Image (cartoon, rainbow, N blue to C red; front, side, top):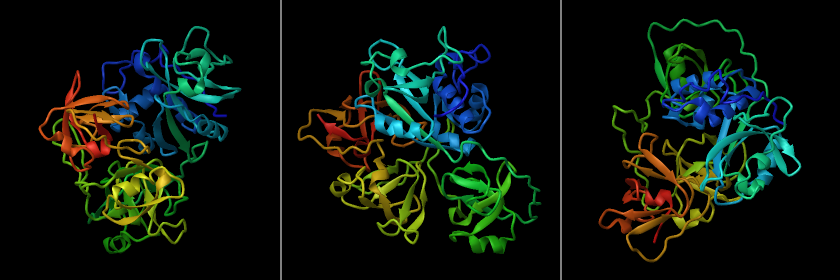
Length: 449
């Protein structure tokens, strides 16, 4: 049973507070923010929707009012965000949810709060399983809600059959490294050397620890490209860079000090596709024609051989890192999401190795296979959930117009666009009734219609 205190988005204390970088309010649209706040408090933190709102804003955790869960571990390192699993058009994975709940892990669900046509999105945090239902920490307070009052999912949210499998339209998977955040150790700051030697995080999720060990207290997680000042002699630090098992004492841009794994840093800052309102976004490295782009469904092992062994482990790959399959597409498609299958891939550093296929998904967000129809009439349909329509041929938060569901239809607006279907390194111009934009047809999983 996951234990926390129920907080309410429509609490008078903060309901009028602007949500993220928008004119919306926490009271009106802060259900995910408030559910996450309750989750964080259940794994050892002490937050309110206002404090989480502010910290996420400072860390770039909002796109307007849209809350970005993958930013959470960079602010609260005891929190592990695994994935969001859409299930609007398929039964919710109840057995998997049950197992997570039984293990005391926090699970946030998307449900439909209104009987209008379509999913009127609301997010709730599971408290425990009750017979064939879930007892909830509901972030929206209705009349009669309060301490000791059980809120059951299918009794309150019952517009799609009043069954768990049909009422749950998405699952957000979380974990924690301990149920209680450990007490931080007392440290004495080290003077920064007169001759600064700068190194850079070469992976997302780089840990800053109090001691040079994976068991050392975790101060924070840092993103790829973070600038770090070495607190050790330059020659000593240079000899460790890229070496497995070595640690370097550093200071980060905020002045916090600790140790980082030397095999996850470099002397050169990697170029990363980034975005802002004033800076053009660089396109990601081109994907080889016909190859599949993949993402881990959770942090997974990158290995020198398709064998689970300490000797084969090269490093751990974060969920934010794109991998490129080096196998023929038809061969890789048959493996994605399949237990005991392995895929040979290239990582972000262009190194080659193997990953477990059962922890991989297409860059379009699904582990399902796809196919291409045999006719073309100027229209395409998506074959998986949450396909991205973008305003330019760049994968970034800034380029996203919207995400669309499975079987969503677009009209191709460029001559010869049909020839690009299935090509991972191409973009195709399309439109629907309200928007014009671009799809990456190989990664987005679209069929000819």
